[in-house]
Image (cartoon, rainbow, N blue to C red; front, top):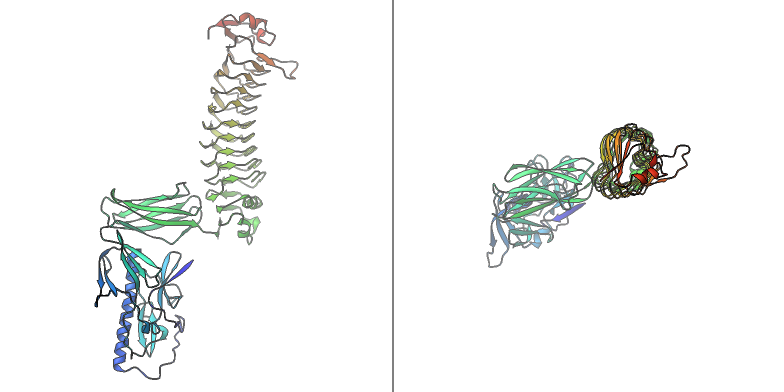
Length: 626
């Protein structure tokens, strides 16, 4: 967006040629007299002084500067202007009242703003340099446009007099013209002087000397691609050695990260990195404990395609951004911006896409079946703001080797990573996850490291970790779980121990069947009422099993094939009954009745010996006080 500010006059004459033209315009019929030439020269000097003053006003706001003194100019008792002294940029004179006669003889100068940079304008158009580029008001060379009157016409230069071109007819000098207005209002505020330019709209608020103030040098807004870094300079006035500068998001959410890098007490920079592409405001604040000043940097995403990076400004438009690309040739892609299910479908339909980085994308839910059976995917980075991974999101992505689940995720859907058998490395489930769906990590046999399930998880689905044979360590079931579902940890052969918390009521069929590395003691907590079919079958390294008094029924084969079993502690006074299954001819709890000892409550031995539900098979039943 470009905005023009009228600053000097309201003349209607336009540039007669472009900045690169050397064509001369028609000369006036009569040259000015000596006296007229002097008047014209005086007017030209005054206009060049006005241009320098305009530069000072913009520089005082941008660099920034502070006001030391303001003195009204009132030769006849009526204020016609002000003398303003700046601490760094010297003193300027600002006149208020226009000279109607002069307006038709003077080019209209102003400032227009594009992408946060104020540039010179003349007659309502950008004032170009010799190369055609816009000329910033505040530039590295400190160049200010210059006017001269020659052969009856104004000529202008933007490169310190190296090149000149015509800029409209000049007055003949017969009329003495008064000073031109630069401002329409100068008013005092509590901590600043407010200067309103001649257009009546554009205003600067320049702090008073001794007032704490911070200004930033940044385009408005700053536009980012995924992971891009912009460095913004800041300047503090009115501060001290105790002044501290900080930067933070208006709504902290990790979408951008900031690092403040001071140069000294009065200046420095802020390095801003786009993590997730949002439209945001960043507050850069200076404080010394007693006073605080804040500047705002607006940040947004840069839409479009840049190599293998695509930024989607409007959700659903990814396909249109890629329409001119060879879809078969795209193997790696970084996508940021606003995405929806339509954009995910576009990505799924890229046949050879192998490496996909969505880390900076604004996507809260990965849709159901998002990349289901997409065989080409090998590496995926999910959005940092993702909350939910949908059902079958990566099901049967057999070649997927690497994926990181963001900390923001709270729900992992059914079959989300089912059969991702080449998914390697540690499985890190974020602390915010509350539910893990059925078969979520079914047969992810190459995942390694300890299986750590966050304490916030309240639901683990059927077969959630079935076949995760390389996950190791001590498994601790979260406190919020009330039911360990069937096949949840079936064939997790490398787990060495399991802790089941208070609050669990049921343990499903084959929940831990085939966890052959479980060693030592297995303690089932008080409160569990039923243990399902083959729940702990083939846990060959267990030496001791404790069954609580709350148990009322146990499934067939629940503890079948535990060759290292030495002791069974069953705390129930009444022997738990067997849940019947069609498992003929062997329908038993344990196979090790002859080698393991059964410990039961005092006074209950005879009831166990008389039980028809397998307990009478134990050859060594011992009463004890629990």
